[in-house]
Length: 419
Ligand code: UD1
Ligand code: CA
Image (tube, rainbow, N blue to C red):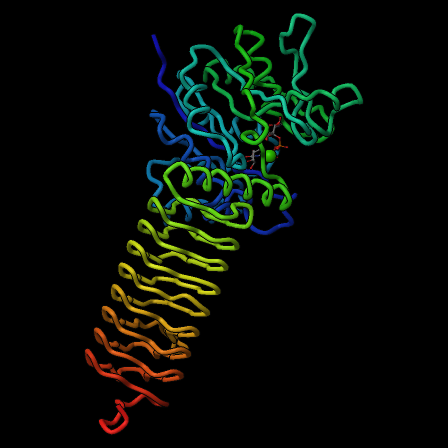
């Protein structure tokens, strides 16, 4: 009989190595908290229940994040004191059934893929995931006997000269029988350099007593990277961004210099779009086909470019919809605006969206032409095919009718004799 599968994610640590910048599992990586990466990688698997261990210090914040980000069906368990990963599991066992299989993940492993977790979850025996890495510093080392069977996991703080040189590490992914785990957790001790209850000791005992197996992840160097310090966060962030670049390249997006381009998760880009160097594209941005973006563009959440729209040098956008073929090629801030198709936004145009208290919208009609250095003080509308002169300040509420030309400060319709 196959026992039901449950998920347990551990995020109850004190985040001491990240300098106290809030809970580590909520640190952002490529537009999503570390924990969200872990949750998403496990989401294709179907679980009977999903539990998350949180610490007393940051528990409320993490629980609130689960709610606001719409993560449903999670049980949170508070670990009163961070006594180690084994203790965190002990706390969670109180709410888990007597039987079943448990996939255990750590909330600080954002690069694990859905494929890897899917593979582990479908194994029939007790499993521990390992990887051979270039630099094993910081990880638990996998110690094997002459026959190759695992005899133990030695944590960094407990290593000696010999174990330090072992390149095979514990990836922190376990598939264990709940029954077996209960027994092993009950007899855990904290006699180690950190005085903690290690889940690794319990997992070793379970594998030993049940003929469980270790699965070695091929080329797992990046995937098993945990985030314990801000330097590791930066490293993982670059790896995740590089994965995003590859994903978009496979869908026909052109990057002139991927190394200087940063694309967060959750971005949609159509085929044939060219992204030029030193461009940053944040989560939620949608770009159509054959657009040109950059160099040095910063597209923030809520930006949508329809096909063949162009956003160029030193343009920042946020909540900005640009219609097909619209162009904003130099030095602009486009915030909370709708730009019609074929409109041209002259160099240095600014949508002044914030009045000190609230944000307001600017609407620019199809094929409008906004002169260089125009300031559009929102809320304001510029009609289809309307024009503004260089340096015009279109004040709030002074909408420009279709086809009209306005100039000056404050902007006024151009007199017939001047036109
Ligand atoms: C852990 C493993 C190590 C492995 C590495 C992989 C143990 C003892 N060591 O080390 O073998 O190579 O991960 O990245 O498990 N946590 C709690 N409660 C606690 C302590 C930690 O919930 O009392 C949570 C943390 O929030 C974190 C996860 O468990 O999400 C791992 O803890 P961490 O302290 O980062 O373990 P490592 O030293 O990285
Ligand atoms: Ca860790």
